[in-house]
Length: 376
Ligand SMILES: Cc1cc2nc3c(=O)[nH]c(=O)nc-3n(C[C@H](O)[C@H](O)[C@H](O)COP(=O)(O)O)c2cc1C
Image (tube, rainbow, N blue to C red; front, side, top):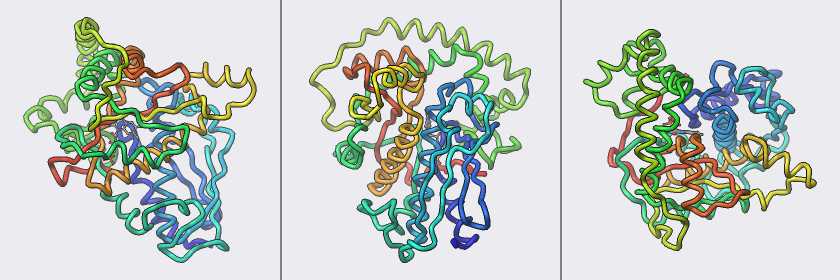
C-alpha cells in the first residue's frame, strides 16, 4: 500500500496545477488509508457565469491529474484512473447540482517501479520523472513581459495526441481578439461579479494567501490596488463597479467590432508567440450518427472525458515549456466570448468540427522570478 505520507505529498504536488481564476476546483479524498483517491469538484470553486460549460473546470482537473501523475511517477507509485458517471455532466458540476466524485484513482502496490523510474502512465515520457516533478514547482503563468522563444510552439506540437493540435496565432490578431473577448465578457454583470469575487487586491483580503488572483500575480501596481481593493471586498462598491463595467464593455465592444478581420490565409506566423489548443473531432471516435450529432451540439462540443484528457495534455505542454525556461500567458476570454471566438475561428480557418479549448501566449518571462499564485 502506498504510504500515507507519500500519497499526501503526491496530492500536495497535484495542487500546483493551474486553474481558471486560481479557483483550485479539485477536492481529493483518500480512501482506505491510501488504497485509492476519489476526486470531487468543490461546489464553491466553480465559475457558473464565466465557465457555464465546465470547459475550464475540466481542463483544470486534467491538469491536476497530470500533476498527480508526474509526482506519482517520481515517487515510484503506479495507478489506474476510473472515470465516474458524474464526469459526464459538467454543467451539473459547475452549477453545483452534483458533488459526486468524478474520478477514482486506484493505487497499485504490486506494479510499482523504483522511485524516479517509469510508471505505466509515464512510460512514453521523454523526461526523467524527478526533473519533471521539479518542473511542477517551476511552472509559471504570467500576464505580460514575454520574450519570444524560438521554435517553441513547433516543438510543443510534437507532444500531443493526434486529435489535438496547436494552431499558431499572430500576436497582433491575439491582442485584438483578447480585447474583444474582454469587452464582450465584461458586459455580463454575472461574469464581472464572479471575477471580482476571485480578486484579492490587497494583503488584508482574508483569502489573499489561499486562492484567487492577487495583485502580485496580476502585476497590478500598488497605487492602483490600494484604490481598487475596497471594490472587491465591499459588496455595495463591487455592485457599483460591475454596474459601470457593463456599459463600458458594451461601448468598447462596439468600437472593436469596427476593426475588420481578414480571413484565414497562408501567412501563419513562423515564429509564433501564441497558439490555440484545438481538438479535431473528426479524428475522434464519437460513436454512431445520432451520438456524433448529440456531442457536436453539446455546449462543450466534445465528450467531457476528452476535455479532461486535453487538460492533461495542456499540463504536459506547460511543463515542457517550463523545461525550456518559458511561461504561458493565457487569454481564455478569446474562447469564452462567442464573438471573439467567431473572429478567431474565421481568422484561423477552423472548421465546425474543430473545438478551440485554450488560447495562450508563450515565451520566456523577462522577470525570472514572477510572483507565484497562492495555494490552499
Ligand atoms: C483552463 C484555464 C484557463 C485559464 N485562463 C486564464 C486567463 O484567461 N487569463 C489568465 O491570466 N490566466 C488564466 N489561467 C491561468 C490561471 O489564472 C493560473 O493557472 C492560476 O492563477 C494559478 O497560477 P499558476 O498557474 O501560476 O499556478 C488559466 C488556467 C487554466 C487552467
